[in-house]
Length: 477
Picture (cartoon, rainbow, N blue to C red):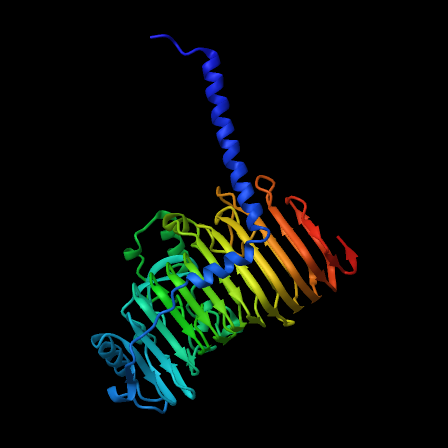
């Protein structure tokens, strides 16, 4: 057998490098196309391809199953029976009529539309034992067995919560919120909180060590708050028209779910970690016509914290947010910080943001423990009245906890703002803090006007921003 000649080896290596270069060129070309004319066509296609659940024309009134209005009688069993009968008959609407109805957690099933008539208010009990036994849930990007979410669907298909009524979690400075460990939410020195060693420190240690979720058992004897509405591993989910208030923790949390529509929902809840909507490991999500007035991020797109995110490895992607109003909150539309599996293809259009208590309009937050790839974030037709800190903030050094440095370098690419008007930009117009090892790339601004920013632009470790017809504080960029 003749040995390979040196020239053959060189030719092979050139072919490999040429192939890699061609692949990089194709990826770059694809991003260039997406960054131009087809962006919003792609958003339209995502919305059109989201399956919205439909239900048989059958109604199951909870009062026919023993429910009593007035807000004092526990109607948990009536809700359970009505849902069970609805499922037994092939699906339909479980109706909550006018009046106040007290209940424990509501567990939705496939083909059930829980419908609140106008004037109906569902009050969730303050008895924490009612949210037991523990269920498979998640807290800040880490899966665990915990108190049931107030409204919970696990592995279901075609589920909905609709109507014009109110879901009241009854969380306040005496119920759920003190567990956050902050005196502003009713916590007192010496009382247990989520920051105690047997709570979040233990959960996060379990995450780092890869302890099976089934062995991460919390609930009674612990102080980790449940989400309000959680659709876990579900398909075809609809939440429409209803109002959520006084939440223990995150409010709308579709996790590992696909085909999710949040339409015309009002969130008015100012407790600790009261994010309005947190799609996590979820695909094909449409958030539209909603109002968010929250104690934390209005919308925060997630994909798992640290080891859990890398274990699950499902990016959140193909998410369209439009025609929404954001008032109070840490951010209007936020990517992160639990983002280890990445976020791709987010489209934000025709939204209004305005409040002296709204800290940022568009925010991306991660660090080298979270890592993650954030790619293709598009914003168009955004009206901002006032923000405290920044219109666009990208931070790869995020961390309110200790020891937030690790070995997982975040990657941020292709962030585009177009047709944005800001009346009062806060401390910064644009604030970007990247990493020397992984600079932020592909930030562009077109037809952007920002007024009243104390510092127009602050950039560290980022490619130069591409400006087109952009004015900040009267200066053209």
